[in-house]
Length: 449
Image 1 (cartoon, rainbow, N blue to C red):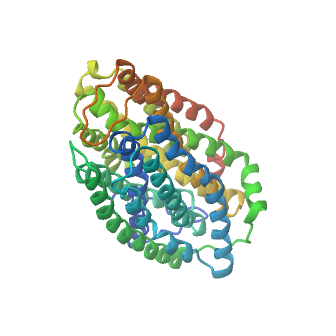
Image 2: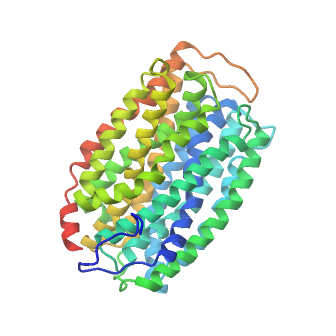
Image 3: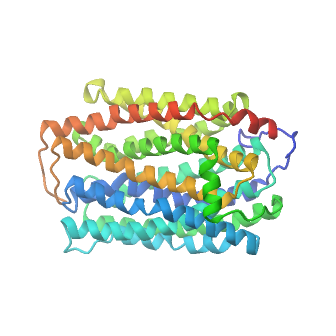
């Protein structure tokens, strides 16, 4: 029996979900992991160092498409609740979302003649389409825990399975994408090849996820709740004080982790002087989650999700401060600091995502609408992080280039790369911790089962 299998058998909602269905559900996260990881890791670098897009414009190209998500995701959440009320499931939206791999491949298939602003426009338009399709899959996918007849601890167990498989997707794509793009010397053709190959894997994983959700619903579907979506449901979600504090804290967390992810290629190349270390740093950031997710599950059962999450946030801030020291700290110390961030990242993925269905079930809200707001928050953080890092680069005088060009960056740009990778994440995560302390529902959710 593994750490993911152990769980209480008492309480008001003692249904134990079958492992096969859990694995099928979790497999859907492989595809989403590619979308979350690869654009966040490589897209800013792809724009500035392959397509010769100025840092400020590259940041805008990634930020502006995400602004639409603030409206798109809650709207998708409303449609998700309508589908649930009319059909008893959210399957049609999930299947629509399975077109996401096409948008992913298009994102990196920039025509060879485009550089600068036209290339940024191509990427921005593909990003808009991809974000909409991502919402179509992600919102009904993450509504699943609230649709099931399960309790506080089983919701954490369900999301722990998702977290482990998501980590595999993040790790595999984070390691493979830079290699497929060309390794030490990435090229346009390499990025295009990478996009096409990873898109095939995304599609297969997402279809398995749709099947897994169906199995979970057959095993433990909760009685359908009255439809409360639309603008009224959105207003209800935003009036929920506990949900607001959880969302605000997660916005700061998501921004911070995506900022770090966007900074990895720059930190490896310009601070450490070895572009190949990108894969090492990604592995150090992501791999610990494969080992520590069961530990976070145990900590959450022992101390509650809220206290465990506060500990993860504090650890992330501490590790970020070490990275601000840069090369003088020595490579082993820096890799260890990134691993600390990875341990904390595992907790910050597992715990908040298992707290959202707690809020929904305790408050009786519309699952799709709440989840739409949540995924809009995640998408906003995914845009704000790279944008904030691009502003650091621009402030330091970073010089953009095309693939194959050798550019010597000014000292100010190298300092900005290091501080943006260390000091800024530490400050942002401290904000997340202070916001998270205002969330007080955890004890009530535990007692409710």
